[in-house]
Length: 146
Length: 430
Image (cartoon, rainbow over all chains, first blue to last red; front, side):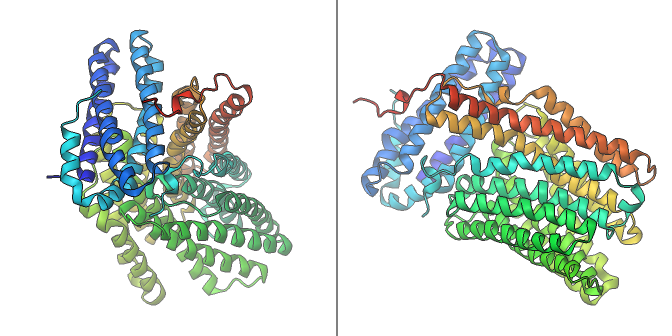
């Protein structure tokens, strides 16, 4: 079974792929990208919830750090959720400039967020939660999005 | 493990990198005017005072300002390393470097000892403060990946070239330009380009290209070995040029081969990127890759000619290093503004594409590349130099405009507070 770090990093790449496909479609027409944009939003939401409802909680319980790195990551999740909602609005309004402006902003926000997680938080989580790694990955895999 | 980079209140203030970014194009403009009033013949000779002054207006005033300024922001994100006393470090080093570089340009031009002494103190102090702070923050990194290794290696070269540069400046102060001066000057310039700039860019590219353009990741061999292979090449080259001068070409071939391989890899990765977007930053990556390829070959041929300094500088420093840095600036400045404003709770901020005028960025790119091509051909047609210099100056003015625009958005938003809303960051009610 993959470690927490491997599992969540692979999920980042999966979301990146959908994001790239969505932008490609949006280049043709925004309406045709709606489905992929929804898919991206849902997959990303699932990723956020796997962290917020499972891994972050385990990490916070184990380390006692509730105002540390996980708080910052939660805040960035909130920023990204807002941007994804605005992207769907831009699709409804058929405003390409607005859409690509938002997607570019989201892309950079997302990537620097992923870097911080993959470079720091995941290795740290793996270190503290090594003994429970399989159980935590299982829980994340079977999570039902709220 | 250092976690400061993950916490909002401890993230470096936006002013820390931005003051460097706002100043850099001004030195670009200054360099453009200095070229405008030079003649092509003087700029063929790498040891002419004009060549030295113009090169340093660009390398210190433009390149080092942007590279070191972005380190304050990139280290927390890329490596989880936070610069100690970032406000004090960036303010004092900025102040010292500005004074230092202006004094050096003026001191060398007019052979004024006092200005050269001020330059020595300013540049020595400024560089040592910010490089030491960067090195200290790198020491705290636990997860030592390829990017951090690249940055750390380039920092070692940075210290060495600063010491060599100070020695060179000192020999102007005591007015003693001997044969050692020439040897050190040669090592200083080659290590600055290939040791500091190229290695730093390679390290950052490993991370940035796959992430921002969803390009294929670099192979493990490339990530593990290239930086070391180039560093070893630079040391071999140094030993050869000191003791076996007739064989230096082999050292150069070694370095150029890996640098060229890297340039080609960048091109291929970009072609395979999954994001279809082709904005001005992608154009800059492309042009950097072409110019680096040209530059590594020309550097080999330079062994036989040695009189085309302006061509070398235009290709390697202008075409490769400047291209990458300007491209990066177009992403980093608007993002920083957006990120800081959004983090403060402002919701309806322009997106990063709306902060930079795309049309202006495209014109800036075209004028910049045209000026480089002009500089290269001014070797054959000296009359091209002036018109190329004007093109370069305008491109730098447009770049300054595109850096100022997002900063104005930041200041205006903070002043007018359109829709301050912290509710989204409150803890969800259970």
